[in-house]
Length: 506
Image (cartoon, rainbow, N blue to C red):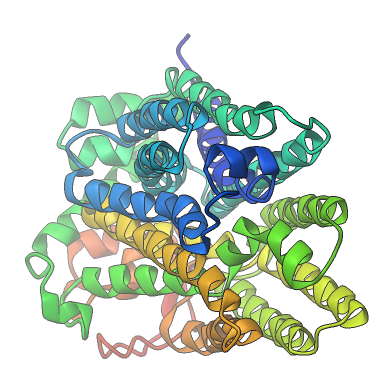
């Protein structure tokens, strides 16, 4: 079966979505089984309870995901986007088999290391794969946004499966079945990717021009000499030419103040900070320990806590997909700034209520948590991925986006490992949430001052936002300006260019 036209993009969406269901499944599945007697017995936590061991079981996946991203950033161009995703899924399947058969936390941790490395491969490459397959600019943000929607759907599925398994007492299936089921999502991802080609931008970047030409013809379902196909090819080649004529390499100093022609280091730095801040807001702390938060810190009954945990993840999935529908109605900056303001209000209320324990304040705190999740769902959850995948230059896209996602996993590891230990400390307790409040509060100003708008531009046109004045009169730059009109945007203080940023015409 040879896919043609939009079927190629839709197949990429399905495959990428399934890969992100796997990511979400892992975030949800442990959160619902950590407190079950069957899991704690198998992991020897009943006889020897240890907050540190529990934190390591949950968070080692995040640290391993960071390692997977670093591997991709170093070797991402050696094999294609598609191949990295397949390799990631295969690695996850091996790790899941080891995890589901564990009779001790050492084996479980080893399995979760493999799952994490595979997840790092997938989360580094899936958004790039989906974005580069989108030939309709207005659909690109929705497609990448949908990946986070699928991740939250996976989390919701996992929590509801955990909730159902609560009723299966005195059997190891309570936790082994949910953990093992992750294999299904990885296997389905590989199945759908079997029918997908790699992306045309990757092929051109590797100087596989004939293959790139053939794939563009398949994507557009038009001959190579058709105007729309010619324009797409010229734009990609012009972008590559600009990157090759720009200041050579990535210089360390440019990551602090970038004066290069295409500002590749600044773009990578922006993605790293943006995604890192999103995961210092508390989302992983919330979803890895949702049941524990409701049961231990808020004081709800186990069954109620498990049901509310499932409801939380369901709300995240619903709001993620709501964001997909309305993604292109507002600019990236608008989504992120509005989200930061709303999240700050609700996390502040949540933190304040936790400082005064009680049944009434506990219920109110749960409500604030629901509201925070509902705002994070369509804003900082997916839009950071969309933005980071868009702003990276083609030659360094695998490096920039992999490093951006690696910052997510590193920050998530920090919060998931250290968070429970801090909360368990009577001298810290509820004050731990002030840490997350700070990052919710600083996020809005960072977007306002440091992140220019990218909505409505092709991946190649985004280069025009960051290029130096020296390159603006080159033939390659003029090629990318073929259908652009001026529109005011954020000043580019590092390049010294505060002129209007081109925006694609309606």
